[in-house]
Amino acid sequence: MSKNSSPETEPNWTKIGRVEDITRLGSRIIKREAGNIALFRTQDDQVYAIADKCPHKGGPLSQGIVHDCFVTCPLHNWVLNLKTGMAAAPDEGHVPTYPVRVDNGVIFLDLAVGKSSTAAIKQCA
Ligand code: FES
Image (cartoon, rainbow, N blue to C red; front, top):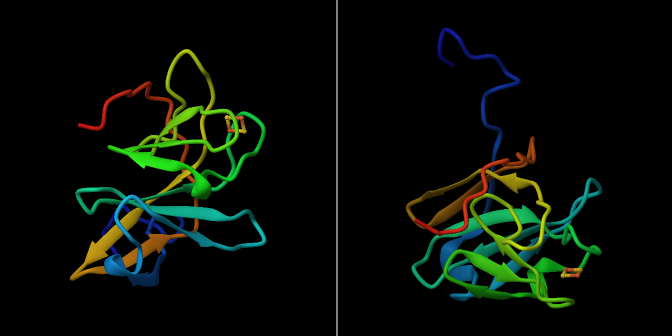
């Protein structure tokens, strides 16, 4: 722990599984009492975690279609940025995102907090 850090700010990494356990453009659900988390693997093997609840009407984002670093909700086609959790315009809203670390193909997730981004990022890069 660094000099200026505290237990509240340190990541609480939880081992989830291996990257290859998720098909490319696929997802996994992590069930929790606090709300399920959807874990996505992109075509270029990036892994992202967001709340599995669309900000529109609660659709299961884990059932959506992954493209680039976005997922399209299966219910009414809102597009959510997997990096920021932000809905693409003209829709408005966001879902919490969760820090992901991949170490030698093993996925770790910080389940302690769901971070919301206010950045209106619409591109993957
Ligand atoms: S519930 Fe996701 S777009 Fe409506």
